Amino acid sequence: MSWLDDVHEIEQVIYAYAIAIDTRDWDLLDGCFAPDAAIRMSVAGRYPSPAAYRDKAKATLATLDATHHVFSSPRIVPDGEGARAHTYYQAQHARNDLAPDSLLMIGGWVEDRFERRDGRWVITARHGTAVWFDGNPQVLGLDVTRGANPALGR
Image (tube, rainbow, N blue to C red):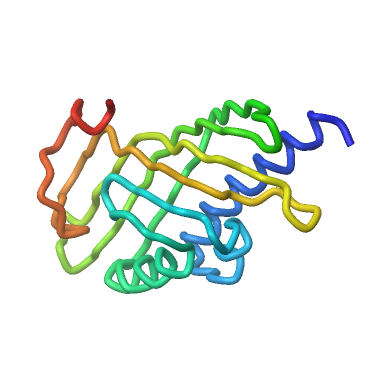
């Protein structure tokens, strides 16, 4: 298997995460992470395991009518026994009961650490950084200001 094959497989994990969140496919979400992965998201908090993150995502997403996550421009670099990836994202969140101000868009990036386990690539650590917000922060019950948030981007 070539490094380009590995890059393709890692990209598929990144994209599977977005599909899992938006379709609420919890089995697909679980498959993106190693069971011992640590997850830290600047908006959603810190989680010692993917199971804890999944439970938080289930609860939060149950309050929303729709989400749409787009991940792009992954930069994947080999790193010893694994790989690191830096990927940009935009995440739209919709809560119809707040109409006409029912949308919140968040933009930023994720830094992932990948390892090949049991013959497939999985995320072993994820750090997500929200850099800007557009729309109504109450869609997610956030206390943030619309626009760029330079403190989160550092």
